[in-house]
Amino acid sequence: MIENEEKITRALLVSVDTGDFDAEASLDELCELVKSAGAEPAFTLSQKLSRPESATYVGTGKLQEMAQLCKEQEIDLIVVDSELSPTQIKNIENETDVRVIDRTTLILDIFALRARSKEGKLQVELAQLKYTLPRLTGKGIEMSRLGGGIGTRGPGETKIETDRRHIRRRMETLKEELSEVEKRRAMLRKRREKDGVITCAIVGYTNAGKSTLMNTLTNAGVLAQDKLFATLDPTSRALRLPSGVSVMLIDTVGLVRRLPHHLVEAFRSTLEEAAQSDIIINLCDASSEEARVHLQVTRDLLDSLGCGDTPILTVLNKCDLLDDSLLAQDFNSYIQISAKTGAGIDALLQAIDDNLPVRMRRVSLLVPFSNAGIVSEIRAGGTLIREEYTAEGVAVEAVVDDIIFAKVQEYIKI
Image 1 (cartoon, rainbow, N blue to C red):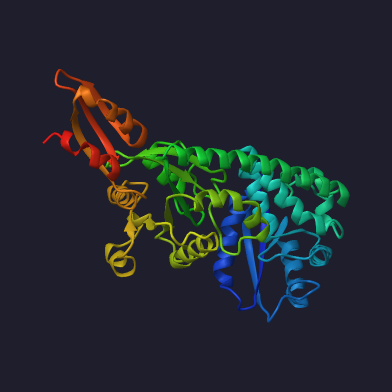
Image 2 (cartoon, rainbow, N blue to C red):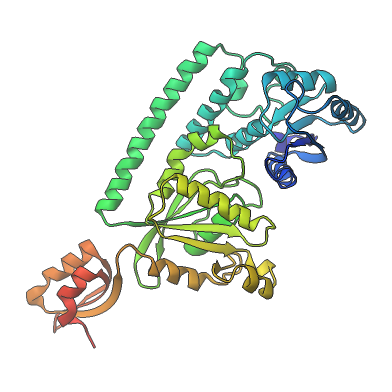
């Protein structure tokens, strides 16, 4: 891997601004992606065009400028902030004599680096092969340097040179294995529903602090780093709310703008796990200049997954980095927290409590022995916090729904 090599890969980042999206913000994000992959974003070049050149992506003059910069500054890698065709990659490499990868390849590489679970690795490999299949021809410098740097990690190292038939067979095998994993997940989800387990998913833009929040709330020990896609595989932990109700908190993969469709499709099942939760926390880095864009990216994805009826809590993280007046002016209607310092966590927990799918109440009861069966009903349908046998009956502290509450009102201790 690049991180273990003595020489850090020096990358030139290239973008064409067609006006279709915020090219400057996208290029800034590409810099963070390159850092996450273990390389140094040494230089950036941008060109305004009505559309990218079909043969070389950038214009002839800009391509010559790239070649000169690569030679003078000892550039090892060119990263283009778009998806390139095999022809474009080949022509840029021929002119610059430097390996070229595009935005999609870079993100796939980071995913290959981060995947830990069996499902995550299967999804990454499937996405890589789908992207590789139409690009088997036209490999120049990239083919000669496989395994030596960014964009060549993971399954691509051994699969790129195989023929199309072998890749298609491998893709079918991966789909079958993923189908089995998804069946097991569906069974677990049904078991949770049957057992009355309430789920709460944390979704949001990558590097918003989802893993830090997970650790703050549950001491989960989830990897929390200042890198894009530090967490790839979903993590679930139990969270006890102030009401006494326990929910299953789920950490999910982060999002980026212009996420390659290969990855949206590959990780759809993981995202659907979050979409089928009872409550969704849309977490955003309030200190980012792109905070509103990040919130919208997440909202759009949740809408596409059909989450319209699910309570969505918009939560702004890293508020300790912002001025109070700015928070009041721009984000007054949102829950404001700092997962790092713990500020605002109580308000967040209360908001989760307030949005539980059923109304839950905490009660202290003294149940006579003649009706002790109600304790078993509480244990099955509510949350039994404490149970003690006394001379007068069973002393119980529990969290119950409205149905059980109606049955135990006469036993409530005043």
